Length: 235
Ligand code: URA
Image (cartoon, rainbow, N blue to C red; front, side, top):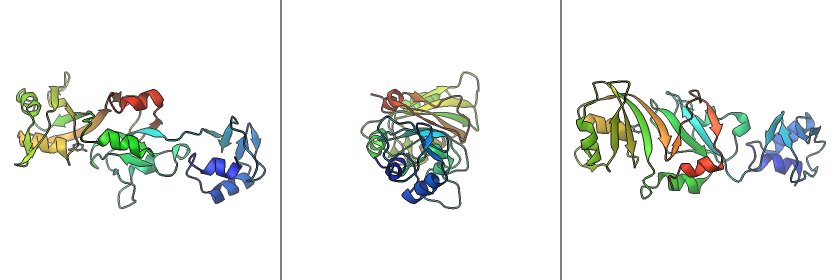
């Protein structure tokens, strides 16, 4: 494949003209040697680097982001920074989007991908892929929450939630873990409002069977590899 096509199509978010500029600057190498022209042929097994960072062809990419508070799960730029702005340049490519939303003041696991089919399956109301949240409350956790949520609580008068699992945090009397099998708007906050409490901190810590990496700092992003991608769907 031509060097400019190899580097721009699907592997990076660089346009062909960006790639040409990088080639002229000697910043694209194949097996350690700078590419001399945009039409140079790149063999399938070659090691191709942009600015010293190796690029690897994959049909799709799956990124685990530890979202900090203050940024929004949107692809469009507005007043607030978006989660996409936190993706490091070497992991960027065309078509990335956040699969599902967390509120601006919620932290934790957001999947960023360019795989529309997987995102659809992960978010589908039919599949009920569990999402696990760490919740800190204004008032102490009460035993009754577990039963009320397990029965499927009604929020805002007429919206019935699916059964959810809630358990107290072993270390913090004001905290608990909540597992949801659906994603209604502001659902965790509204569920605790319905039982007379208030969420003061919320973090998504697991999607399906995949935990947020405890070593990933807030704002950090890492690539999820094949066997872990399957865990997102909880098969
Ligand atoms: N429930 C909420 O209330 N907010 C979130 O961000 C996610 C789930």
